[in-house]
Image (cartoon, rainbow, N blue to C red):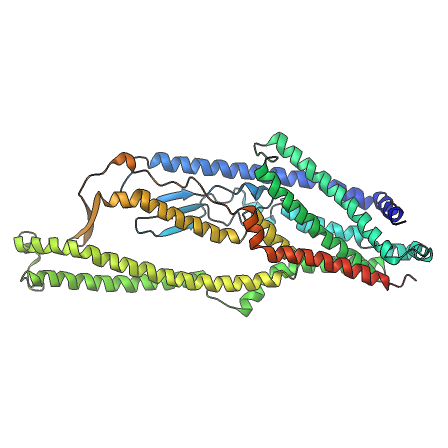
Length: 489
């Protein structure tokens, strides 16, 4: 009996024009979204290779102590499924001889119009288009049969209500699933035939299958929500109205409003204010350094029996005792300079760490609020699985530190054996001492960028995965229990 109810439900849905509309949307948009995202990834990868090659060719003979090392980050291969923050994430790391590193986004946006309207990638199609279609398919699954009188006849035949509701959920979901999988398979075939991305390789296929399973579970949530709303309303008109309002709340309002609420709950200063604080701290330390520099000069000259205030400037370059004092100064100022550079770096690091901690607190508040919506959970989970989410920001920082350490050990530490910085007459110069085997000094390049493994991404976002499972079970159970006491009259 249960099998016959499922077949009956499938036949009714297949003959409905809405099922044909869902099929057309899936077989057109999913392949198109995957194809466009893959082409964009290929362009970004080509830009990455060109930038890295130009950097290496231009600086192959440009070996000096004040050289700024650059490491280029390869685009995430899995960004073809979800672009996430890829337009915002840094794609270049720079570091210097002091160990100070920075990140920046160098490639920019290929088409600014895409920022205005957003990209139709695999993630967008599921979270926005298919989630809405799930409501459209199920909004009158109960109220429609109640209005036509068929539901009363089915219940009158002594069919258990749990079988009726399970057949409706199963039948409608199977039809939707066939359309979704048809579009997905067609998209994979298109990528295999028209792009250079090895989509069927293990590196792509395994993460995609994980994303696909999570996506099917995510869509199952909206199916159950649609059926629950159909049970909870008295007419098809009320059901479609309620479905649209709930969808707008879940898909748009909650995700958009969560950062605003977090800012109200836990306000923090803007990045511009923090940058001003860092500049003020730099100026403060540099004033202290200039003062210490002058005191050191007076001390060195005094040790040589020279009064710096009364001695005429022109005698400094001709007087042997003054030249000796300057040499003493040049040796001692190096340590003083290093001390204040460390003070500056430490002070700036403290400000940045404090600001990052505040940002993290606000970010977590925003994430927890947005998790009220299943779309919030799905977004955080899938974007991190494709290495285009919030977690990638900390991963870039980790790679930047590794690159800075690599540049120090393989380049700057070797160059220090050849160059010596010293101060003369208020300006910084370099003096050569010792020898160096130039063939051992290589321009630092970021040859390997470490993306988190799939298991790491799942472990990091276990909360979102559990919440998706919870929402699926919750709305499924509510639909069943609500229908058991449903008045079919």
